[in-house]
Amino acid sequence: MKILIVEDEPKTGDYLRLGLREAGYAVEWLANGVDGLHQALEGDHDLIILDVMLPGMSGWQILKGLRAQGRQMPVLLLTAKDHVDDRVKGLDLGADDYLVKPFSFSELLARVRTLLRRGRSGMEPTTLQVADLELDLLRRRATRAGKRIDLTAKEFGLLELLMRRAGEVLPRSLIASHVWDVNFDSDTNVIEVAMRRLRAKVDDGFECRLLQTVRGMGYVLEVPEPP
Image (cartoon, rainbow, N blue to C red; front, side, top):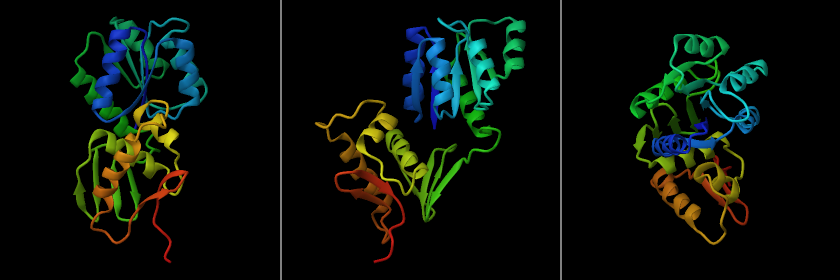
């Protein structure tokens, strides 16, 4: 699942980004309000963590702009503004939760999980399935034919991307930007290594091999057609 952080304080932004990545989420971090609103409108984020006091445009304005455009992704306001009137204002503008700085990361993570569990007005699936392969996005658990597959956070993110776009050949550059949040470097084999390890966990022991390499193009997860 993909989270957008709009936070101008470098230490807090970096802390959030690293912590949420370690928890297995794909994270994007922006430090000013104008870019934050643009990316929130253009992106496909499952959750936004939003500071209020931002350069360029306040968190209030971003939240108001999102809801005015009909964007209903969950928004968690994370701010030093701790007055009751501020909390009421944020919730009235359409925030789904409100957390005051300084905060406990474990509490923030629990709130993130709760908001993601609710999903976008209950319309977003919380489980992905391709053939007998299942991915529970909330419990962070993968199974195939009912058997548990142990995955690292990166492997989980990689499998989630492939399953969300099952049947579509994904180039290495797209995988690098979505899972590693970096531009693709053709000199590195990090994606090939990760795919090889993921394929071993997902396909070894099964006659039907779901993860395919498309030479010169990328990777696809799909049920192969019978010969």
